[in-house]
Image (cartoon, rainbow over all chains, first blue to last red; front, side, top):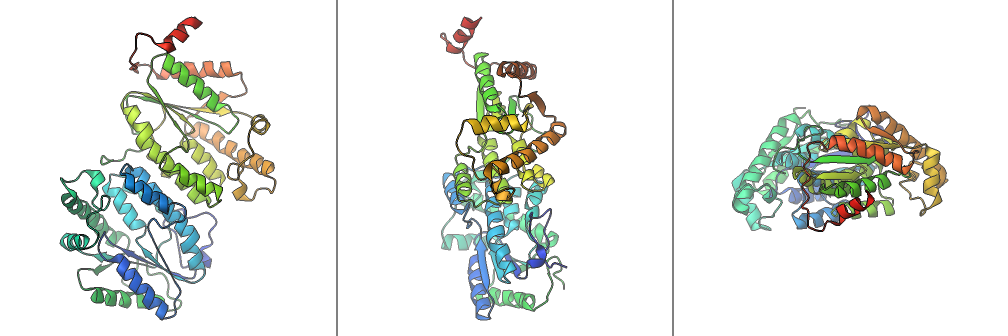
Length: 239
Length: 244
């Protein structure tokens, strides 16, 4: 029995039995500290002798650069954006994640299909449509959802790079300025993520705490996944 | 698009959308171009959208093909992305403005090619769920041998993906092309009924095919405004007048 399964119809020509590694996802809204914790987890896992592949949005050889260029223009419609990211995701899934899983790596991914679905749904897409599009994705072993409230997010965003056009949902015309728009857009995203905690078995991690505390919590949750012969815990978070 | 995304068959636009489908060498582009000129001479505002032409996306597709980086899945998704961009910028806005939109290849091209590559038929139909349903979809039906002769006779070398070389059907590119296009024809034939494609016999003369198309298009245009602004010297209608 293969450990992995697809959300829907799946990818043509993939033998799931061959996938031996672990697929671990960090999800959460913008500015919640995902990339910091991916970096820390990677170092910790490698120190403990695990081979790690880390990946994230718009990093594919095929479409990564074009997505970043398209975002500069601010003309991308929501269907275009969602499918551009789906192309990027499929390229990384087939050419990075699956080969790494086949080779027994731990794949750490900064966001997965959940962020991509949430972004499209708040832009008015039919939730069933985008769910079916991502039917080719693998179900991960675990999804850690870094959760913080809007006030924490705003503070972090200002401290870091400032408000970004797309992270503020400026294409949706939600507010008078980037601050108003950011707050409303992120509030809508949080609502979608919160729905997925139950529907997709996310493990919610309180990200309003210090980096040390959050990382300690993540290590405790990742450790049981590393035992040999441990089956998929996706959708079975009580186990 | 902050309004809710509407799905196939649910859009209500005052314009009209006519599309042509068929394998390479079926003559569909010639027919569409004749239709375009005629519609303009009749006073309609006409705009057109070609497969694989989105300014944001086409370079990615081109590079992916050139470097042979595409799997059946990413081939499918990058074409859907291109189509989405054109739907949002080239197809929907003119339809809202009561124009006639013409498309050389449409979602049925993707259904035929992607399924011929092993992509799940239901999945790819769902992927294009946001597409506007055409007013009329013409399918230019041509025997494979006729199309092959037209193509191999006078054009550049066959390309890797259009010949289905990614599928390991044959080491010989012409043979691979023949097998792959054969599969695509099978998919088109299945879709004639599924999507109500209007089949045109592409072995008829160019004039006969065009006459059939114009008749069907004329019926479908009932109630469409001729919104083009007429200037005092209208070259298109002069050309039309001189013919009569």
